[in-house]
Image (cartoon, rainbow, N blue to C red; front, side, top):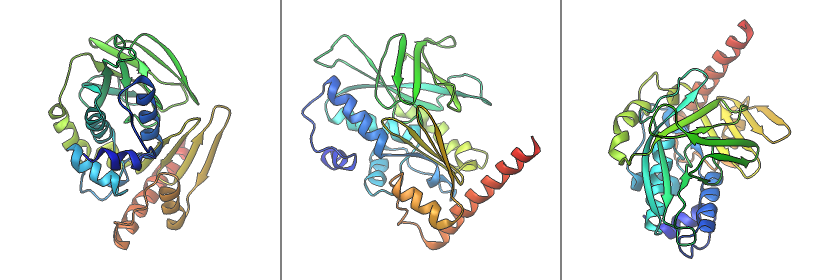
Length: 282
């Protein structure tokens, strides 16, 4: 991996070696500039898992990624910068999905930093509206505006549980203490990236985790959550839709043909209409 190019991609000019402060800066910069997104999956072509291939697309601003891609490439990036990184099998809980660990989420921990060698850190740039900066791998809470996060021992595996803020659609995430490799996530990636019933194909979405807010695109709804308010906008035209992807999420989509852009917007429109119809029947 070209670490200098990747530093520039996330808006940083230098890295002076592993430290707690540097890890926080890298995590925050990555979360703010590389979107968690499923736009790339709307064409039904899938996407790469191998970190070098993911990094190439991120550097070209053709895509962001989801957890396997974002945390996979971040693990490679951190390792090449000199950090000690461990992968773990995880799983998320939502309003419709019970808590379980089935390798549907890739989680990272970092340990052995010279300025705090006894402490390990939860690192996760692939949780959408989750962490903006690392959390100590110990029971406790962290205020990461606009959300309150809590880390505690998991009740379902030998590992840990991250409880998300009630305002998020994500209830929480559990992960194992045991070490995993990227191969442990190949089957889930093969399903989630191309299966018609995958949530990543059924919803065109993008997330940007900022210092004081979270911006989320779901089909045509653009929502930014702050500590004291929620702003929402409906992107009614293709021009508005692609302007938001470019200006807010850093996805210019210039590699897409006009037909592909039309196809993606049509899918997002259909998804929004399905959601709207469901609201009108409730």
